[in-house]
Image: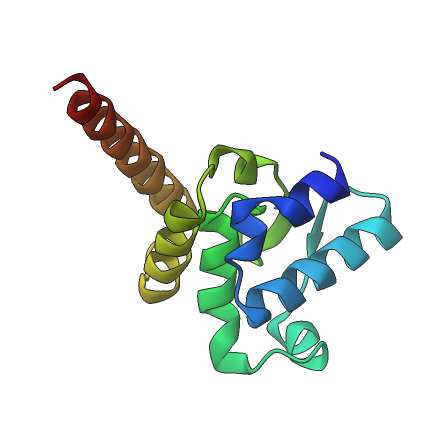
Length: 130
């Protein structure tokens, strides 16, 4: 993934401030650890300027938009390039809002959002044919 592509992507533009700060923290930790995934506590996210009650919704947002994969307990965060699948600003905004409001595992969220995106694309294609 190139940094410029990520910064210009609709998914990145739809991120909330809390999600951007958390993504920055994860990128810093991964860059300094030389490992593909890292464990970061909520306290560390708080120290980075994210309110404790905003951490979980922001993590769901990052997972839903495809920036990170979250695995295990304690959570380990790994960068992902799933954000490339989010192609329009409207779709990115709807994923971000929906993800912040949900309380489900990130894998279920990702599965649901990809299925929803495919359904919307099929409907759009059918409308164009008629």
